[in-house]
Length: 165
Image (cartoon, rainbow, N blue to C red; front, side):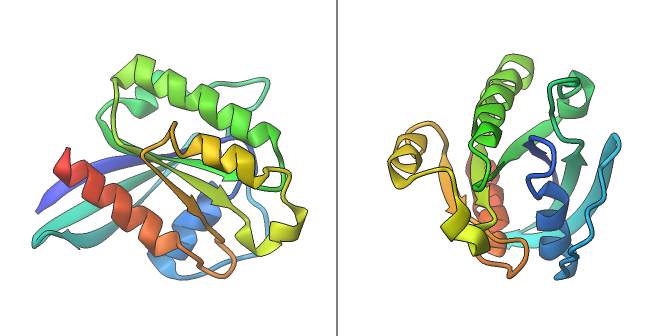
């Protein structure tokens, strides 16, 4: 079995942990719990007849007081940059993190999850900005950890990018 480390990255409270819980355990909770440090989950998938174990590192959220630790990124094969569609500033954070990742571990596959698609009417990120994003990330998904929209597809697409890389 091929083992690949992927990192969930983004600002504070964008839904990284909720996306992982939805993907790995098919559950969603309205309760918010801050991730301290890193939480690791695993899920096996099949990519082009290869069994791949995704080792998912759910990293604490970036905010004005703390940046992502370089040591947490070492060995990563890919990243999911999570953005809260209802908060424009989380997109800026995700782009800063993406630049940090490139500087620390090089150009590895990454997708962007514009999360909270179930709250689309409250989004601050408009379609014009989303069009611009599509040139800056490998793949862009509009996800909802709450109802599961495109969660499985996002992780599967990243696994495929990693295996093809």
